[in-house]
Length: 436
Image 1 (cartoon, helix red, strand yellow):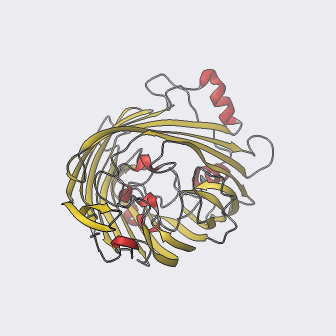
Image 2 (cartoon, one colour; image 1 turned 180 degrees about the horizontal axis):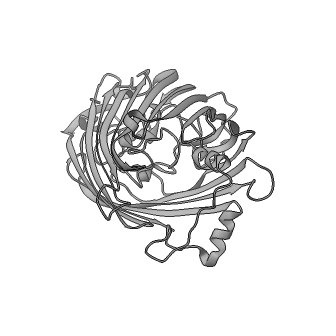
Image 3 (cartoon, rainbow, N blue to C red; image 1 turned 90 degrees about the horizontal axis):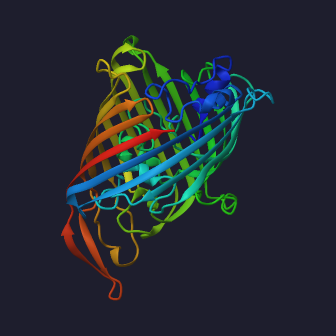
């Protein structure tokens, strides 16, 4: 997965640096943010290359049947991104600084379903299972021409604008789908950390990042959001990624094709907990290195105006299937934007995913037991834009989880016994996002 941080924003700004700055003005109901232009100050700063984007996403979710446990949880995540454009600031052309501050609070229901895929992606960031305020991105990007740039720093590998980007199914679970499998390709999660020290190059074959973009990166394979990363970056656990995305125009309609690959030199002796594997910190047999390949597409099939209409999307991923429990993966679905008259900012989506699960080789009392099965699920959502800065999203998911049964471990006798089977989970949710 490309660690392009905010490539689309930065390179787009460089390619179109003569365009007018983003406007935050307007009345309470029509402006782009809740707090507006701050008496004109926000627009002045934006014109000079300084922007602040702040949002809060709140979710209420319940696993109403099946899975491991039933219940309801309320949780949330806040995010602030500051971008500095050195060209607009009058310093030098082509330079972009990005700093992101991110934190979550309360508890999600991600462990209640028994699935590998988190049903509430929003609560995976910046760290899983912890309520923390972290800085996942402090990075610098420099373009030397309209075709070529480099970046270095601590980067978030998944943002709203980059990282396995898809028109209808992408993000951190705050704007489109909630399930992790429908937001990005899970086959690459083991090899690519979310927040890590990295460096790489960006190639824009046509000058316009919206038309074509290629990123090549090297990352610290042990990076996490709540550490600087300088203690692990030189230990040799390195991940390499390459990704390319191309805009297409089949049948005169907008679409995109994306392909990428990852390779990690890391020694895997425990499961990556960002996968929400059912045994926390479960020790697995030693595996050296891991690779993954991924592909996604989006294609409008009805587009009365550019960027509005109904389209198809899909993903495919494959890994070595050794340390990585996700051997093969695919998803497919339908998405729509602004198709209802008078509801230009509304979105909807229906998606299905399937994971061919490879049972990792566990050590200890579970060494001889295969307790994971293939996982699949369906999700549907409708995103009501109450205003441009406030969106309310009801959501429903049906998940046949990878976990077959709930196990009780007698840690003194080192015996694992069956407690109960894990049936198909039905999850309902309501999400509210506010952009400040």
